[in-house]
Image (cartoon, rainbow, N blue to C red):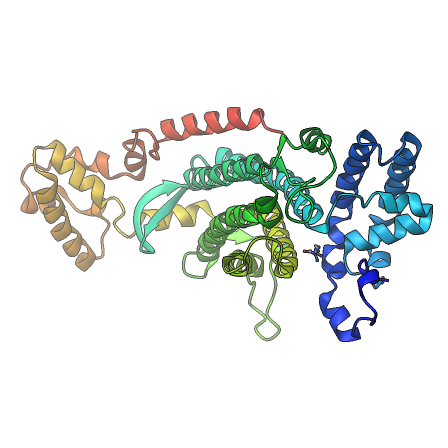
Length: 460
Ligand code: ARG
């Protein structure tokens, strides 16, 4: 029977019922629904709707339901209950009869679902925080190992200046740190409990909503019932955090796909995370990275879907909200999986140092260094840039690196160039001289590594 049987004389149309039901999606809120229901039972005790004994019986039965079904979700979804709230309600009443019915005093599924969703988001946010930190640790580990592994740094996908793999790892640690701070902010914004707001205008029972909030580990309660049952900002916020972080993981994937390509070819992914082609026996494809990059679009889709879902809705609750869970769950599941897969990728990759260093040496990525050298010798950077441009054209024609050109050749372009120019042109010098904060010099990298290590040490 549905929750609203009294008002209706006709049974639901079978197709409508199926269309209306959300249990197959929202069964995942079982833990959160039971947590908020137990808190609600404790508050009903305060206003003497429940006796001590009744409250205890309800709490015990709810815990029993949770234990029995949390790992048996297939048994939940075969039910024809409308949603997880009605499924739990029916089971509770089947078990303990009319005492169970009392739990539904003063509470609506509207404040219930808003509360449960916040609890779910909070739970997942904590898991995500841990996963971000784990990925940062793996990046840090690689960064320590590869302080001397020189790779080409690119702009416009053209070799620009040499960097180290360590430095590249540190860049992703920074991006992940912003993701971490964003999710912390999401948690902070989640911290107000909507429970006790009823359907739209509050509850008629004299309950202490602040106490109720604390019972569920919220820091306080929301301030306006009309807003509280309509508010899904927190879903937009968590999915925004997911979308930005997925963009980072997607760029990480793109970098590695390119580094792994036949053309760049200075990283190798282990067999355990690559796949072959059904036709071309020589192929070893970076599917895992392509999937992370591909799944990013699904997370954007979730964010856009929830934004569009909400934009035209009048206050307060509308059944459109039921769709929010589909997008929320898909987006967050995908983010979590991609964080896990990124850890696996990073733990399963090898660098070909000789090749990456050779690539860094080619492509005239020390040209800026030559221009800087001319500035040291008294030229303006614009003039130096122009002269070096001409030198590079000639070097390309002669098929030589800059450091292979002889001094007389250099002097044809600028008389102030001396023997000491060759010191400037080595890869080591290119790296060492970028020594302002945030630069690629070994000294700056060491400093960053130590700072990140120290920060991560304090995180669980
Ligand atoms: N399954 C519903 C949802 O997810 C629960 C709230 C139903 N409330 C209502 N007034 N019909 O949004």
